[in-house]
Image (cartoon, rainbow, N blue to C red; front, side, top):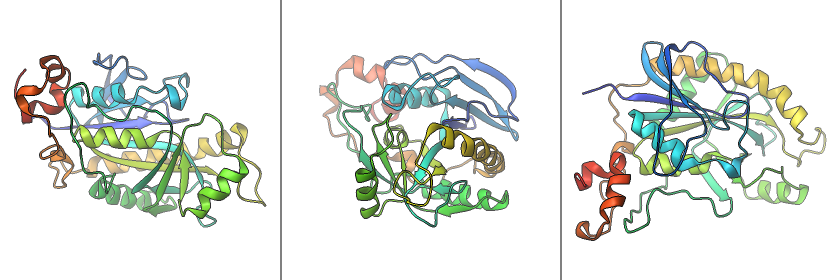
Length: 289
């Protein structure tokens, strides 16, 4: 059995991954359109890896423009069993400071009308999403962060907003009252789709600011975010490089069979084209089209 590939999604500021060897670029066609960019496929610390710049190289795509389905489907087509996703976020807690990293384990959705499922068009599935990230992978990332000297927090709720604007002060204060830990614009849809694709998924939330709730800190701005982001990205690269060789080649979590009892459509009612389109995800349960 071929070794599963490790996917890496780089967010704002993380557009490439040093240390990749034998790199080739792959453009992966999908039934959902084009991914954000070409995948950089190679080996990192001896393990097969594919890297994707979430916003495209040169940061060309805003959060609402991201083709989340194509991005995750592309990783599935390449053979990914694991995705490590790095993302810039604002902190909603005094004790989570800029330059800290949070290993997110929950999400709260404040986006509008984003497509966040592969299913529909005659094939329906409902996956469990109570625990939206892979706990085994999250714990591994937490240990790797400690090893490289990062200030890393295990667990936290990521509030996903639409953007591209940052929050108003009223919104920021209300979000804080909800007990969320960080705020961002991208990772929730990735987590949902990775679960449907039976890929282990974990988020490295790279804290750049205090949003606009903090009265003694400067308001969040692109200039302030980028200044902190450059330092955060270097830490994230070290963390990922430390984590990749420690990822088990055989998964022991439940992510790899998330669809086992989730498909509820009668098999003879599923359109043949939908089965073909989703074959990388559903073929082991539905057979060939």
